[in-house]
Image (cartoon, rainbow, N blue to C red):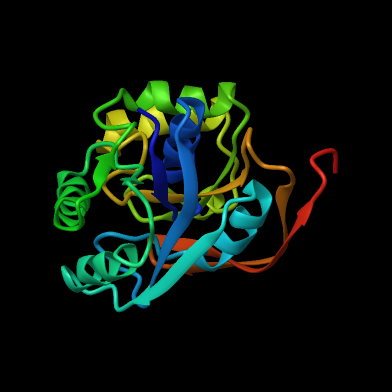
Length: 227
């Protein structure tokens, strides 16, 4: 049975791939839902560049609903439940892969609201997911790195076969999650198979502090895919 859904969106690769998967199986995504945390160490939501999700919405043609959250543990879950309670949908899509913390809280919110929780990437092989992103034509950029082995040069780097090889090396040496599920890195999606246009970055800034940092996008725009 096809459902009318709200898809949680950070602008990163996991939420974008989960959204693509449910669209491919015939579900209708009525809304994209973005929670914008006011602190960098949010337990549930991405911090870097969540302000770009309106471009994701415009490129995909799916309406965006967003809300600010303190980012405090558990309080942000309540904030998400409050927002979802206002939407006329039958289920919620999340890009959780291995984080039981994230998945369990999304499932709990859905149960409270009488919604179905869809986790299309749950417990799938991380390497296979990265390869799927490439084979399906997603354009993904690394915009935050927070673990041993990463350096400043990763900020702004594209996900490609060489990046996957380097991630495999970091996984062997430092046990870094290939998909960054432990918060080791964060990503930004610039293009997908379902975008009508792609996102182009006009002005970015690398913010680096010791052994970690993120790429902040000051200005971006939509351009034709041929550009």
